[in-house]
Image (tube, rainbow, N blue to C red; front, side, top):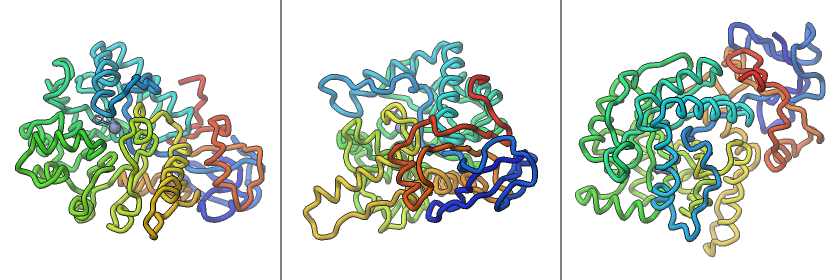
Length: 404
Ligand code: GUN
Ligand code: ZN
């Protein structure tokens, strides 16, 4: 199968006319100029780029976007009022099945062809997502939520899917202790055992101030929040830590040392008024960085809009910070690089998120109504609409959106 279009190989350079040959679910060949045979999709005015990767999303919250409680008191109140009721609906296996399918279709529509995410604590949340993956083989790292306190009984840890550490199709099962507020020491120990064969660990860290205060009360012997996870051996280079808005220097250093990934979720941090992420601290400490939609705290499923939010949050800090040293504002090309290649690297997918021979064929064909000039990536990020996508190739197959 051949696709034709300008090849967005490197977002820092103007894409040149070319074509992609796909064979055996991989990019088999990249060529310049006119294609050797009639393309299946695209033409000389199209753009071809890797599909987006979302490094943090909650599938069961797909229909809870925008639920902004009046007089909202931030993360913890929102969890109780909006999120836990939404996740309770997954108690019904049919609902879980239907919603997993909806989440998959919406990600596909938005151009997200790979993700790392959270399910619910229900055993069948795992089978639901495996079924969704049979129909639509998005590349994924997904895990059943682990929590044993601080929510209604049906949401607490009962039976951990025995599949936890295995791979089903393109879905690698991860271990997802929700956050330290919701996990006892016993459950965090179990998480370590379950992840000991190399499964990814996904969790939340230091998202809101109130959450940090609660963790200090619940774990009085630990010097800080990050140390709670570290004491249980949960910080490795296969750990994804969402948010990290309120970290002290010691915590940044520890995360850098462990080579864990910090997942910046700028749209969610604004929605819940959790705080302004310190991108410079992450850069200065050499911490591995990824970007996540964090739906439903984040209202945007489309990763180019999450990239835009990262840039805008950094610009807000430039405008409001009094200190002489101004924060670095990521360029559109840097931001685009994160939602494709950078997020793939963070998830240890060295063969995803890039236009390269041998990479997985998870690609988008775009048709945009503006010049493919020096400002291309900025124009894409700031005007992004899902309608720019004319074709989606998932695992080497062209997928019609109506069919899934
Ligand atoms: N912290 C613990 N659980 C959650 C969740 O579902 N969403 C967000 N944004 N933060 C959390
Ligand atoms: Zn989250």
